[in-house]
Length: 309
Ligand code: PSU
Ligand code: MN
Image (cartoon, rainbow, N blue to C red; front, side, top):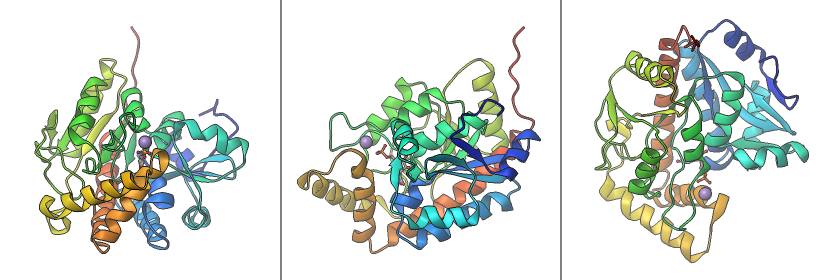
């Protein structure tokens, strides 16, 4: 961490944990700035940090505040992120935010960039971006980040607002292992099943850690994507959610919503159309993913040191 650029600020407890090789879990913040309404977003941000702590790891929520990239937020800073209408920061947006001294929530790709810079190896999120149905070239930078960052990313799969088969094909093309946690099937976010297969199955945090070690020890440079299905209690059936997601997608096309605005629009519409049920489901698996990520981070200790001959 000695050569960090000046625009980075790492919170003291995160710095200490990293120096001592203790488990750390990165958390994203676009879900706070663009995924959930206030004050639910703040409660969720706090609860995700508490979930990571409860399982014995140090949480590092990542965001940009007044032009500095923060790895780990104080509670006051978390309040600020949750309250301000901020930028959505993916990889290409950091420089704009730094130059303008702006604030923003980091996407999966943005969070992976900052986490990787400081040496964090495990990251919990809700859903990754992917190939959209609405635009031929709307493919999330999240996929590129997964292709090129050695990190374990815990998610609940991808939403069926995305083109799931194309997203999975892209992950295969990019060499990203897609692991089902306790399942052989790729989970579809709100629903436990999607009808699509994962590339491998794992059943414990230790197995995830062993898989990641093997992947990186042989020199692979891609992430390991761990997909944990939503709990049965909070699941929304595909019969119920699919038509709603289709409607949201139709509306986005009618209203010509594209680019960065598309994912937040779809999330919000699906939430409105399910009367908040999708948001409750979202919160449920975000917390489950934070717990699992902490357990995986613990299983990754001692960290992998790749030696040359
Ligand atoms: N999917 C969700 N909730 C989210 C996101 C995706 O269910 O909050 C956010 C994540 O931060 C993800 C980003 O990285 O949206 C993807 O945006 P885009 O499709 O514009 O790359
Ligand atoms: Mn996009």
